[in-house]
Length: 237
Image (cartoon, rainbow, N blue to C red; front, top):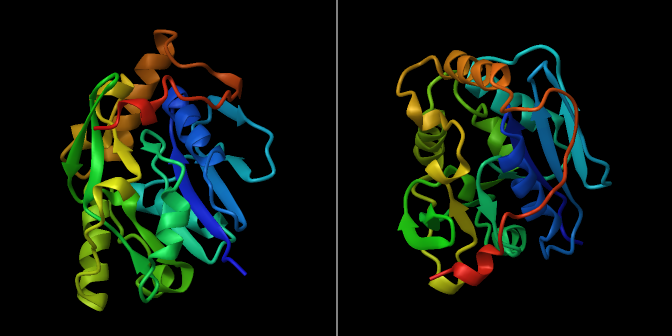
């Protein structure tokens, strides 16, 4: 029997990018049980989407620091395996199945991915790529989850902890098996990497507040309409 997979998707004020991340989940080819856990703590929004495998949790209270929000998302998960599912990136249909099939001692990661340099311009890339991580629930919590931090590099800190306990677990994969498209400027929204300090939550809140005042972010009850802005698979290198 295939294990249940929980895809962890904390979100804050990035509705349009989130809709693409949800669509990426809905088209996954994994045949086992799975869930997408979306944790929204923007009190001006109530995100709504009805699907048996997608859980939208709206919290009126902000969860800080950034690491605490990541860990809160993980605590809501019910699966045996956790997959990082950043709300602003794209995941190809074999992301879950490939990860589950290639777990070794409860871990999987690859430094290989794609980067969307511009709409319909996708190139090969290498990086830490936090969103390529797959980890068994027991290992995640044995390592304490994300270490306390409000720095955008909390993902780097997590990897350092994992490597110190388990050695270098990151693997090379073939170009044909790459499943992740990293996006930065092309989402036309904020990115935590903008703020190289230990105050990412407050900086994100200030940015989102300004966009709400300008009418650029919807408030109130927000029905989500999962979709891709274009078919990313047609523009892979």
